[in-house]
Image 1 (cartoon, helix red, strand yellow):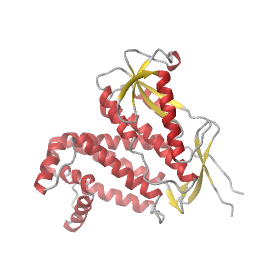
Image 2 (cartoon, one colour):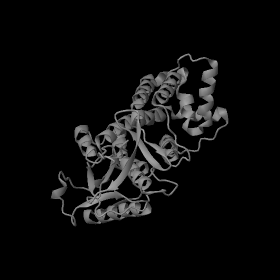
Image 3 (cartoon, rainbow, N blue to C red):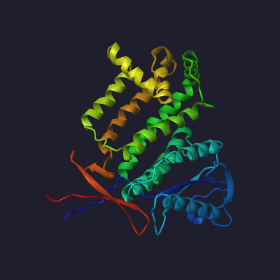
Image 4 (cartoon, one colour):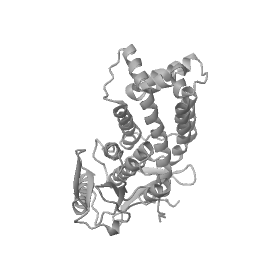
Length: 343
């Protein structure tokens, strides 16, 4: 008989950001639903002031819609709220958070319940990212211990560790694009390439969307399993780091890397510009910080999910890939079990 054990690296709760309008609240249980006014960002990116009761109803409706779109039914939807302090950075924080949260939109319908649950879990992971990443950029919640504690209540331990690594790398990229925007635009002009973004933040979001589509969506819907040898994947990742760090790899190899970046267009163009020694000297520390966060991402390879015939597989303690099964609990949480086939 198959044996099962609960996995702990898939998000299973919903999170929302509330900005209190003119009122300080330290504990949600002390909030009066019909008297407390909060600011929320609706699906169109518009900031609105509503009562907390209305906000709860809006959020619940949104999550039910997302579940229904994937054919998922839950008896209960657990929520976790983040109450933001009333600071000048709030509008920028909320705008960026809203945009990041909306990146995790799939272009295809799931083939089965496993894919549906996995897609929903990815969306919940991005909800958590939509809190942690903007805060690393704007430093709105200065007590990171408290923030980490809250985020850890949304996603399991391994997912949280992955999220910290990803958001560190994405924060360093955001800072690079901000300080190097003029150099990137100048380079594009010399190459006869149109710069289609209003500002560097639009470019940043474009890169996040492109990576989501290539690294997340395409893997799940690939006709053939994208199974990679982990050692080869890590070697490939480290090869890119050497190139970005201007190691002497030989003219032929460097030309190949440059061509790949050019073919990636606006996901690759900024790296061509910013890796140049003549360009990145004014912000050398930021560039080195970026490379450091990219080195740390190699750890994520060990937790990669693999798909074969629309069935998810993952390694467990060894390099052996085993199928996993997604389930929805009575509490409205998503859990995954290993399917260890008996011999």
